[in-house]
Amino acid sequence: AALSLSQLQFPVQTLAILIVKIRQVLSSTTPLGGRISPDGRRIAVIRRVLADGAARDQIWLMPYDEGELTPLTPALDEINDFEWNPDGRGLVYIHRVEKDMRSIAEVDTTGKVREILKGETGPISGVQVLADNRILITNSDGSEFFGMDRAGRAQARWKIPAWAVSFT
Image (cartoon, rainbow, N blue to C red; front, side):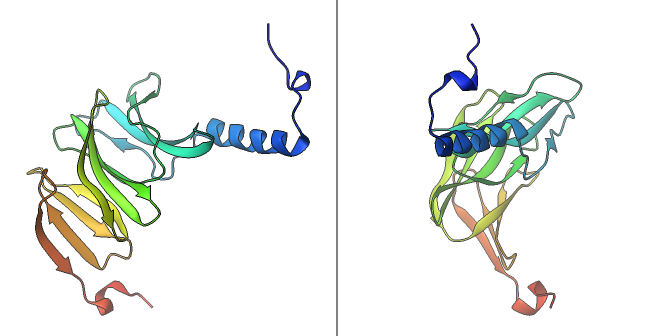
């Protein structure tokens, strides 16, 4: 038998919060939009989901032609960016682990997650996976770029002069 909201005994304030959270989940916001796999067969999107009583980000997959969205990553505090691997067998993503700490991880298309760089401080916000599988990370204002290998070892760092970043 279905249960209606009128049968539930919640204070009005709790009910209002519950309705807001349900709307967040149902809206399936995609702050970064979809990314089509290199072979063109799948689309990865970020969905906002309700987990542990809070709104969280999660990468989901769906077939390009038609089909259902299926979750790929666990629900995370915040996903800043993600990018397909050149071979299309997975994605690399940046996610928040604490207030000012980010981690870089990769997930294969079966949902197996591997941390590449854990608990990095600083405003890293962008990720690109190069054809030779190196990873390029950018900070939030675009003034620094970091190159690394799949083991999370730094290979290069470039700092862009302030005059080249600012447009004002």
